[in-house]
Length: 360
Image (cartoon, rainbow, N blue to C red):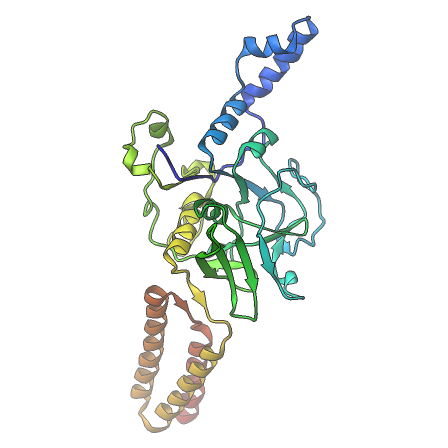
């Protein structure tokens, strides 16, 4: 299909079941006097070896790995789960080529003390590896992707960014942590020019601008690709992400768009945001919100002082509704995220106090 880059949102951290049985048979044949090479030839090529050969032939396949518990700078040294390791397995996971991080900022970044890499035969064959973070906000909704995670004193790269690095011809990845509000990631092409850049917050997260509901990005059945039922033009030169979308397999999350969203399509949205240069940007401070809150409060005081009770209530609804619509417009059309809780709280509290005082 001549796909440009393949990204697997699948963890190949264990041997293929048939390969494990094959290894046991080889050992038994060796004990009976059969040379190892002969035994392996009799049993045929292993599935993992065939997959590794295909990955090498494709040339730009990115495999996924997972971290243990992600916390502030990976300071947690709790129990290491089975299958995870604290040791670096070579080749190491992809890292940023250059990271400008002022002193004190590292403590703000996510990190882990352990990870679960692909099995070694696949790890060596892959073009690179990127982590697949599973981290949501406190209400259980995934609104952002973690674009940098600390591990073994390195600034590691997620699957989505590893795919874009391969697409850009393996140019440099630059992590730039300046003053608050000037934090960004730069993807360079091999000539040194900026292929793409996008903002992140102080924790290294990028707010995802979801394009739409599930299926906004074209889905193809894995079996249709294996049997070459898909027109070649549909995939040629494209980024292909491979992942599980069936509900019973568990790789689904709550997002602002839908409460049951496939994880692989979250990566697709993040990649498309970066390519389209329309990542959602959160204001660096709450100055705008404080000013708007003050203005709404003053307007509410004036309304409550000179208008009747009914007109005052109507003014509160109009002011609150107008600000909410403006905030919604900035988010969906200009990709600017501004807070609404503080200004609306100021409006409601001012209305309650001034209208209540006048009533008293």
